[in-house]
Length: 203
View 1: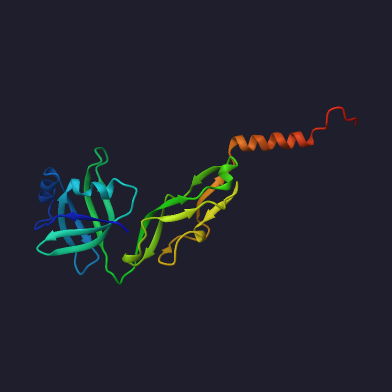
View 2: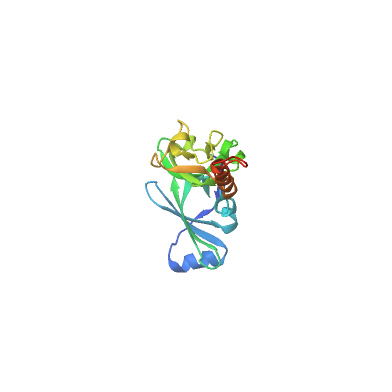
């Protein structure tokens, strides 16, 4: 999985006054969980642009100076309801020997036979939860729609790789090819034509 580096600084004070001052200065207060103790830090709001405003999944290298560096994933984010300004971010620390569960996007590959025949592809799950060691976390879960005929569904049991586990029930539908209105109308007209008596044929 691709990684983003965020350079910040540890916070000496975590009270409301200092938090407000950080936000007024264009910084975002953050907390890193998962280690022996929580680490409070802040970083410039612009540093989170490629992490927050993207559909892609990333791990994060947090550099706090003085040789302190942590590898983590975004756990939770709070934004202002009106301005969408980032108010606070929680991170969870990663360890090489401990599995982590996180959401990654679904990437559609292939060309569906059902779509070529006039069906409509519907993506039911844009992201899937996967569990793996940090080194095995995928950038995306690949969903091959090539075998799908019109009306078929692709379940989570047909996606994924041995390096990670997809954390959804087996009956979860990743995507499906639905019959379009045009295809349905054509099928109805064909059925009517088949039932209708041929011209000139006596009853």
